[in-house]
Image (tube, rainbow, N blue to C red; front, side, top):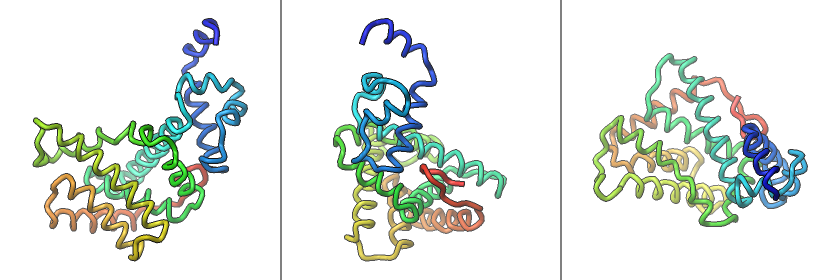
Length: 227
């Protein structure tokens, strides 16, 4: 790739977003496995090399797509909570986010297909973007009983990330014998157990988050959307 093209590419702030949007649609419609960088490049009207310049690998691009749509889900849910309840609680919102994500994977086969196939990508890339900021937010807000000297907050983040991946895959592949509600409750509660939240408080978080979900007017649309 010559220097002129590189300079032109760096000066195009919308290019990365265009790639993400094209990848999101193809990953959703075709699945991760059957989508190739050449197809994404063709839809964007660019070369494959320009995609690898920004994202290096397909698995890394898939992680960015995942992070992007989860961020969009979170923002939409926050707006819905404010609109319906007029207030915001970090713990309740986190539980609502997580439970609605699980419901999306249950109700939208294409969304879950992408999630599952992505796990077959590069293992190191899967763990490249844990949600560390979320757990830091909880630590600041609630003064968690954790050891900052040994960077326990990062360990909690990776433990939660890995357990989520394992539990979601196991449940939807039929390896866990329980109802969806039991699975959702356990998996959601685990996030707070890892943060050493009291069990009575966890029960309250689950109860209140379910009440919020019951009040929200939502549905799932194509391309990982909550409406």
